[in-house]
Length: 640
Image (cartoon, rainbow, N blue to C red; front, side):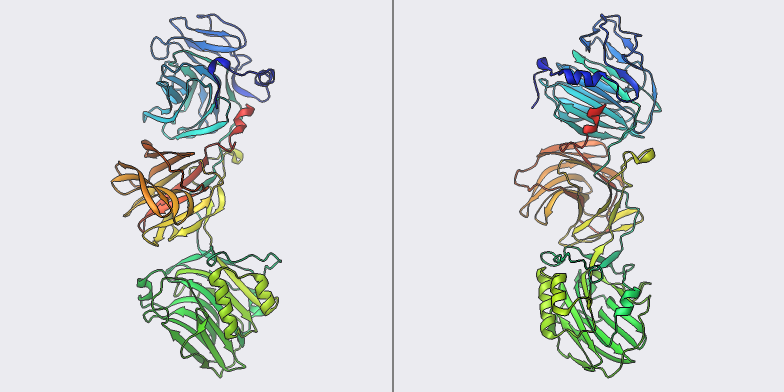
C-alpha cells in the first residue's frame, strides 16, 4: 500500500542516507539551499556535480525544505529544469526520488534531446492515471501502468545502446521494471524534469557507476542442441534418483537427419564384451510418416567391425522394429511389428549370449514372436570409435533416428532374464527405476544407464545487454525443457521441428512468475509466440501471432479461453512482448500496445516461461525474460 502524498515519510536515517555521498556521481542534486521562484536558473546542483538550466517564465519553480517544487505549467517545458549534457552510454542511469504530484498534467522524467523540452527517453506520468514510457524518433508513447495520485513515486531511466529500461517505485514498496523501450539512440542527452503541473521532488542522481539489469533468461540461440547422455553407471555416487514420473522427463529429440549421440569411451570399451550382453532402450516414434518412411533409423549400435556388432533400429519395413546380433560373422536378427505404428513410448531390448549361442529380442518387456534366434558365432574385438552411438548407425551420422530417446541401459557380462526384462520395462514405464535397484539386482559396476538429455542451453545472447566487466549480462547456462513437441537450433534461431497434438512448447524455470518476456518471431504458418506460467500440458498462458491477429489465450485444466484477439500486421522478426504482474497481462507487438487483460485466478502459479508454436518451421530469436522486481531483484537502485 502507498501513503497519502501529504504524509511523505522521511526518517532522519533516510535523510542522512540520501545526503551522504557514498559513490562517485555524474549528477547529484539534493536541493539543499532554498531558492525563490526565478532564482533557480544557472545555480549549481548540490552537492554536485551539475548545473541547473531552468525555463520558468511564470516563476513557478523554487527550492525549499530540501525539495524542488514546480507550479502550473504555462506551455510545454515551462517551467522545466535540465542539467549538463551527458554522452549516451549503455548502463548510464538517472534516478528521480520521492515525487509528489497532483497528476493533472503530463510529467517527463529522464533524458531530453535538448534544453527546449524535446523529449528523448523518459518515463512519463499523464492524465492522473497512466504511467508511460516515451522514446523520441519512433514517438512511442505507451501507457504501461496505472498510478495512484495519493501515492508518491520514484523513477529510474537506464540507457540501453538503443532505448532504455524504465523503472518505478510506488511509495517505497520496491523498484519494479516497468517497460523496455528500444527506439532512441541519440548520442548526447540532457537529464530533465519538465512539462509538469504541480510537483515536488527530493533528489536527482546520476551515479558514476554503470549498471544494467541482468535478465533471468537470455538466449540468442547461437549454441547447438544435439542430444547427449550421462552414464549413471559410471558416475554413480550413491545419489539414487528416480527416472521421473511417467518415464524420464528428460528426453532427447533426434531430428532424423543430423542427430546422434556418441557414447564411445575407453571405459566403455574396457567393460564391454559382446559375448554376454543386454541392451534396453526407451523410445518414441513421432508420427505415422516416420513409421512408414522406408528408412532404417538407428536406436543404439555397439560395433566392432562387419563381423561383430549389436544393432537396435527402426526397420525400413512399415511399422517394424528390429534388433540384430552379429558375432564372429554369424548374424541372428528378429523383427517385430507388434507396436503397429504406435505413437506412444515403448521399450525395445536385446540379450546376446555366446554361451547360449542365441539372441533374444523384447518389445515392451515381452519377448517377440520368433525369438530367440540361434547364433553360433563368437564375438571378438574392440568397439569402433565412430560406430558406437545412440540414435544413429555412426557419428557421420548414418541412419539418424527420428523421434525421442530417453533411457538406454547396457549390461556387461549379463544376459538379462525374461522376468528381469519385464521388471526393467515396468520400472522405466512407471518412472520408478533407480540406480539402487540396478545395483541390488545386477551388482555394482555391471551396467551403464544413459539418461538422455537435449544439450539445449541458453547462451546469454538474446536481448540482454552486457557492458565492460559483464555488468548486466546473465540469463545463460539454463536448461530448456521440451514440454510438448520439439524445438532445435537452426541458423542461430530456435526452430520448431515437431508438433505433438498440434503444438510445441519449450520452457525454462525462470524463478519468477511476474516477468517481462520478449522474443522476435518469424512465422512460416500457424501460430508462433510466447508461453508463460507453464505448469503442465493442461495449464499455461500463451500469446501468439496467427498471421492476422495477436491472440492471448489462457489454458486452464485443458480448456482454452481467448483473453485478447487484436488485428496486427505481421512482420518477420518483429518482437512480441508479454508483461505479467500478478493477474494482469499486457501484450505488445512491434512496440505497439495490443491490449491488456486479467488472467483467471484458476490458472496455477508457475515460473516456467518459454516459446510456443502451432506449426513446424516457425522460428524464435533473441528470447529474453526480465523480472518485474516483485521479488526485490532491483533493490540495488535503493543504494544510490
